[in-house]
Image (cartoon, rainbow, N blue to C red):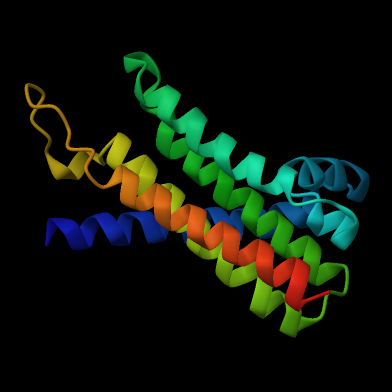
Length: 171
């Protein structure tokens, strides 16, 4: 039951943040949005003209920042907030892609499934680093981080697969 609550909790964060990003799309001017999105993933704005290093680096940066925040006791509350922020950027980028006229087939093969899985893996990573309140963790017992390497390996695999599909299949 508790494990199911964890997944439901993460999916709710992902869904609400994604919808928030899609709604934010309507409120931000296009020029500002392009700058923000191109910082997150420049492929969304510039397409195949951008190399794969920047998107991979940004994905890795999210994981590194979350790990650093987990080692600072006063900043642990911000870990899930960082996961929600990544999901908001996912929703904002998705709305931008669809609003700019990207083919729905390209969107459904490349952007949505891979970003969805990457965001969920990142949220799971954040939840392992700082478990949700309802898990009732014992403050004298150190949290188990056995799942972190598995989550990181899965995220690397998903990112590599996304890069291959974007630069080879959709070219």
